[in-house]
Image 1 (cartoon, helix red, strand yellow):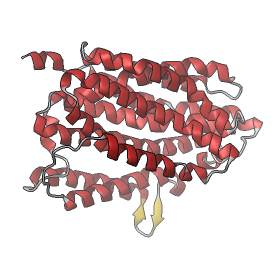
Image 2 (image 1 turned 30 degrees about the vertical axis):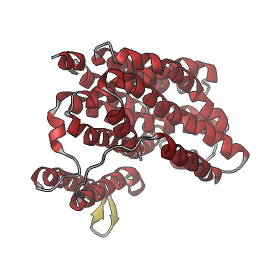
Image 3 (image 1 turned 180 degrees about the horizontal axis):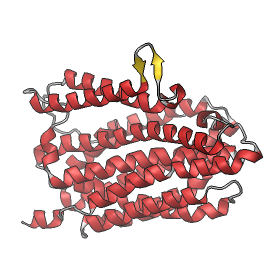
Image 4 (image 1 turned 180 degrees about the vertical axis):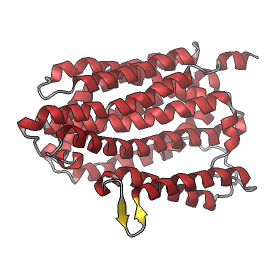
Length: 371
């Protein structure tokens, strides 16, 4: 579903107004990512965890009806389907993600027989390399047209959005685990830590969208991603056993600035200078890159949290997943647990910093269009 949203926007809106549309699209995506945990917390606290699944049924029905009524009928083209590419990418991602996410459970060693965690990770990388080679060599229509990455802005935007997808997924888990397991807040109270971020994002995203149509994207995206990295590091430094909720409002507001100013310029710049025939495929690949970052982010942060817990707690061990299930950390281990969660946040911050460097090399699409 996700790649279709951006592809439709790319085809409907011309370049000069696409920034505003992408700004709204980005703000909705950013706010949804932040509001989801709040709604989830309310459902878990008041009606039961099963409702985090049931709530999607009416939402899906409403979205389906609105899509039928509001999304215009667009011209379509016949395409072949790269089944080999799908198979290679699926197997490669499964091996890599499983190895990262479950590595600590098996002490990064043997799983069974000759199968080990390092073997799975190496095999996953090898299969993904084979996928890239296949995409280059196949004479049929590839799953991912590699020619897209010859366009400078598209390549750099994919680097940036990979970091955004990874960081948004990775940063929430340590914060929520800390809030519930150390501070003893309910799921709803923990999720409300992100409320200032969501409110500020929704208010400022349209402003950022209008700026995209006039300013160099490196300025807007660079500002947004820098705020993102700063906000995550701020959270990492602030997590202690006795940190009150009000001390987390400021970093939440910095993340609100980040969400407002990073989505639209990165998204618009990714496809703005692509040839019209490549814009749809480019939108799909761009969104798939974001999802890939999210998948790897969830796997990597789980592994890092386990590692930091083992380092800080020594003989006392409480797996991050168990702590996130509602178990309260004993007072004697609370500060060490807090620092483990805080230090885990430095990984997504470092990945976002790479994204900052990438967007600083954006070409100005406004000049390209004038030429």
